[in-house]
Image 1 (tube, helix red, strand yellow):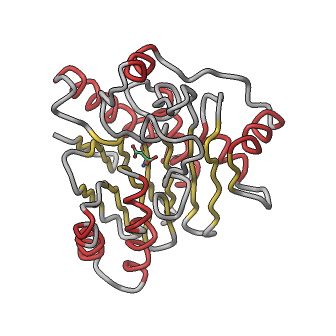
Image 2 (tube, rainbow, N blue to C red):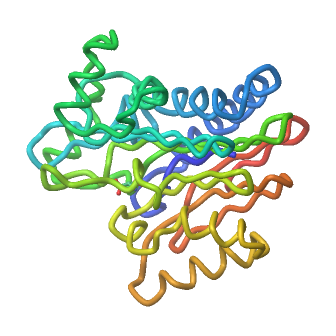
Length: 277
Ligand code: ASP
């Protein structure tokens, strides 16, 4: 299962919608083919890298620009089996933040932010890359969030029953320097042996709702996944939380949910692929 953030009908055209549907279908199917010979953990990184490389989505190339005119990206990966989590927060000038998170996976210090994350990426050999596209600069200059909320994510279950989750974002756009996105926290990206979740939406709301960690905990404690998702999203209502999530369980149950229209998603089991409508 993958997601590509939110689609705002008021501000984007039907051509963009179609392009997102086609891109999500293509990436879900390519990731599924990859999953046949790779682990869930390797596959979520592979899928998120493809999403980062597609400028239609707000992650990697095509990321939103922060209030000071600079792009800072966040990404995280979690292996459900080993319960290992690694991530980068507010990383600048790399092509694939998710690959820097992958590189941190085997380190002792596994979540790095800002300058330290940049230094680590440089030392690990990630070349300088400017992820800006002209459309984002135009939006920034017009101070318009024309394409709505973004972020990309993937949850996967492999043939050995292992789950993993990965999430990557360019952030909300126009945010204050130093603002922390949910994507590289356990609220936005979490997996264990029972369930894997990747979120998108307003990071502050996702953190307030502790969405990914809460859904995974509830499923681990025996709650049906549909009920866990419903309850967690109901809890967002008291503060009108804006969020979406893709949820995959160890039994292969796939759930997607948003509190506001419309998260864009795709999922495939190799035989049939479904894409948001
Ligand atoms: N969750 C991301 C953030 O708040 C934004 C998004 O999902 O579009 O940084």
